[in-house]
Amino acid sequence: MIVGIDLGTTHSLIAIPNEEGGATLVPNVFGDFLTPSVVSLDCDDSVLVGQPAHDRLITHPDRSISCFKRDMGTDRKYRLDIGRIFRPEELSALILKSLKADAEHFLGQAVEEAVISVPAYFSDAQRKATRVAGELAGLRVSRLINEPSAAALAYGLHKNMDEATFLVFDLGGGTFDVSILEMFDGVMEVRATAGNNRLGGEDFLEIILRDFHEQLANQGVELSNLHLQDLSRLRALAEFSKIKLSNESAVETPVVIGNREVILAYNRPRFEEQSRRLMRLLRDPLERAIKDARLPVDELSDVVLVGGATRMPMIPTFAAHIFRRFPKSDINPDQAIALGTAIQAGLKMKHKAYRERVMTDVAPYTLGIQVCDFLTPNDVDKRVFSPIIDRNTPVPVSRTETYSTMYLGQDQVKISVYQGESRSVNKNLFLGEILMPVPKNMDEPEPIEVRFSYNVDGILEVEAKSLSSGEMRSLVVEKSPGTLSKEQIKKSLRDLEALKIHPRDQVVNRTLLSRGERMFEQCIGKDRKRVNEAISRYRAALASQDSGLIDQIRKEVIRVFDEIDAFKPI
Ligand code: AMP
Image (cartoon, rainbow, N blue to C red; front, side, top):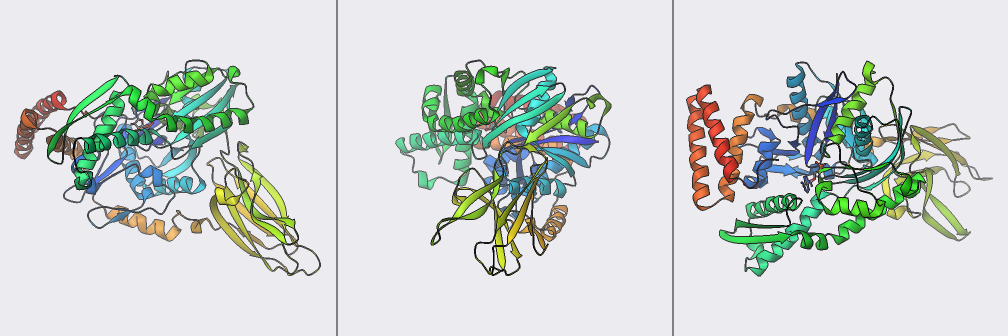
């Protein structure tokens, strides 16, 4: 069985291909499809993943981590209280392991292979890091699929469309992707894709957070004295307000900050006003995708919204304004990507029900090397970008270009690989380099052939060949920044293996206690007392080890918590 996984910035989901040619979402241990992409260390140093970890972001911010997808492909390290350092791919691996366990429980069989979605605009290093995360979780990653393509796959099948051209507008927690797809006779083809891999719902949250800080300062709260816990509580309140403002025009919440109760208020017009700069950033990828697809906006059959952040009313309004029609969100925007990954898994398995469909994708950005431009014999621009694979070329693709040495007698060349759209490599993203000897030639420049192969996973292979000596070199990917070497992966596998993972059968109890602890911190007065009593009753029931009593008290405690909790689990 190959499963499909949407490894999101804020939430992750797992789904499996089904007999009807569609996909089925797999519930986690709480019966939810969304598992928060959060990792936390419990007091006994065992790892908690998902909802309990999400609650602990507030009560134990020093032992809990979220949003690490944003750092995939970088060398960023996260330190957790036990002195253990985690890389973003290791934290992602813990999420994947938890999803894998959910699917194994659901299916009653081992799961070893997965299709995982990545933002279309993820760079080479970010994609490689996602593959490594899969490997660390014990999953063979049979394919990485671009998130909007996965969403389109789910959407195209859902609508049972034969012929259509549509735009997927995907605004998740941390990334923004736009793809234009054409569906014709069972073939789904990506015509163009564009995006910004550092723009998402989290940035909108920061706007509210900044406003809250200002409000606190105006109410005389000394911001520099705030504790980590106060800051986490504020962040949770900003997230809560953001989500509430999707349905209501204003929010007003009392909160205890620095041992003082203050009221923080916010409203939709203010939010929209303060979000103008972010809304402007959405425009550029949209315009670029439309231009690259060479398609008049009027010819789009549908505009489809996916990603949780498209629930903010300003997003459909903005899309309607640009596309002169109301966007669709027929499939739950949180689930579309996961369903699409599982459909891709079904296609990969050559499952009977999936035989008729083909999906093709494109390279989301231009790939090339650094060259020198001789303006005059004595004036050389050394940082010029020479594209080899243009953005939005259908993949897989292999392209070759021939270059030559700069000077007579040169005996070595350095081939620096970049991705991006700027003429100057300074503004593009460096991916890695190749050093290669060339025969010393005093008569004429030596020719060098550079081949770029870009596969369906969006991973690049570069090969350079000196044409007169036949000598070849390929890009040593292990050395590119933000990527783990084979030895590092082995060590990381051992380290993760040694971690204590919280036992699955106790997760429900642990989660309810985490929720209670979080609510205790957030509430005051009568509510706090009720939460405290409920926690005590629940602890006593757990200590009795009487499963009937535990079940009964758990239900009562959940009821009490639901009545009080403004930050109900999503
Ligand atoms: P995704 O990566 O697709 O799970 O999207 C997660 C992002 O969507 C997060 O930034 C959430 O805060 C945001 N989000 C989820 N639901 C809502 C909502 N109802 N209103 C506004 N933002 C939301």
